[in-house]
Amino acid sequence: MWKLFKKKFAPYLLYVVVKLIYATNKKVYHHPKKYDKQAFIICMWHGDLMSQPYNYFTFRKDGIVKAMISENRDGEIIAKLVENFGIGSVRGSSSKGAAKVFLSALRELKDGNDVAITPDGPRGPRYSVADGIVTISQKSGKDIRCFNAVPTKYWQFKSWDKFVLPKPFGRIDFYISEPFSVQGLELEDAKNIIKQRMLIHSLK
Image (cartoon, rainbow, N blue to C red; front, side):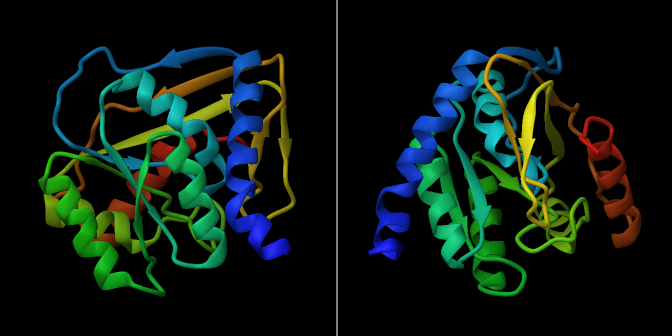
């Protein structure tokens, strides 16, 4: 019964809770002034992913985005949750379904859709950058944009990613970086650049 509840009802209940919480917060967007229609790769921390639908659809109102989500049980709940926000999913991870998710992500980018990646997911460690985002960016030729959200009041879970859920009646600052390329860089150099740019607006 509990498994059925988590699968069928938990994503929708979470969606309602998140909508109510964000409706009570003042939202301030720090977005690039220049806008183009080129597909890009969204880089966001696993513990900050719940804020990013608001960030993305304010920046690109009619955009199509697919999130790379692991194929485990928690991933299934997350996939159903983000679907309620109008976000599709590409299922797989570096440890399971890696080839499939890699090819699917490249296909989405080629079709002009944006792809969202949590480089420290699905298992961490927190604020680490796995190889996948670099490989996908270099193979697709698409730029990366860093997405961050910083609430003034929030709950922080004791999970490995220190998942953040804003509290009601605060302020949330949403950040999107200018697009940047990692073409021609060695793997570790590219990962370090991504991490440095992501940490500029990250919670401790």
